[in-house]
Amino acid sequence: MKGSNFSLIISILAIAIGCNHQEAAPAEEQAKADDVKTPVTLTNIERLTFYDSIGLNATSVFLQNSYVKSTATGYVKSVTIKPGDYVNSGKILFTIETKESQVIGNSISSLDTSFRFSGVNTIKASVTGFITQLDHQPGDYVQDGDQLAVVSDMNSFAFLLNLPYELRPFVLNKKTVNLTLPDGTHLQGNIASVMPTVDSLSQTQPVVIKVSSQNPIPQNLIAKVNVIKTIRNNVATLPKSAVLSDEAQTKFWIMKMIDSITAVKVDIKKGIELNGKVEIMEPAFSPKDQILLTGNYGLPDTAKVIIEKQ
Image 1: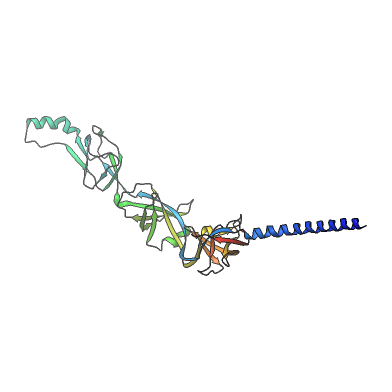
Image 2: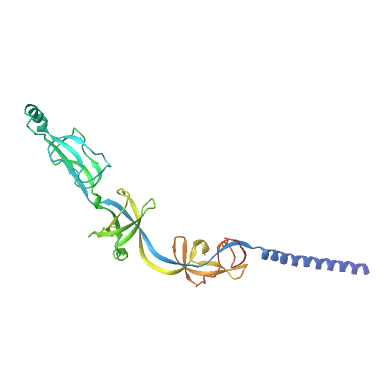
């Protein structure tokens, strides 16, 4: 009996020790999990001026062209231009020698030196601009009134903005707009006029925007026009990386520090985004509140973190 009792006692002690080990293991694992801290960086609420805007396209155009025409019937004697040349008003572009001059002018002049008939007409540019079309070369025979070239009128250069009719109040009550060219150049444009017509399909109205640029701007260049709809001052904002969302992007939240090592989830109401900043509409945050900027993705509602230097 004594041997049996001793064996029973040993068995009971072994079972008790095993249970203690099993209970201790989860506790140790939990303690280790509590010691895990995610490295993060912090940011604060920044008060900025935010504006709600829409981007539209404007195309560079020459609203008027000058058509250079022959003033006599004859042969093109000389051409002083080529396509793409920039010419000033008054520059000689062509000389036209009449066919009468070629037939009788030279023979009469050789017999009578006092005869001053040349039969050569000079044709000058009437406007300043670029040669966008050249139709004849030296030796061509032309009739009186034939088109010789086309000169774009630099004074008529503008950007043409096709403005959706519903956006008229946000543009036509302004005197100036900002344009951005594809190379990043920013220009200030003045609204010169509004065309009295609307496209029947797109319901857009052409608006003429005049610009001043030191460098020539080619025709058909598309610029971006930023149309500001509303402006709000003193808006609470956070960097975009500080704002988290679900997959459907219907719920938004941030992770806020409540002490030196703990961050908690705070649901927010998000506003508009501008230049990498997000408007925080609700709740109200203090400028002293510390909000996770990096390391916030995938954290639980309450998380232990370690703050790294920015």
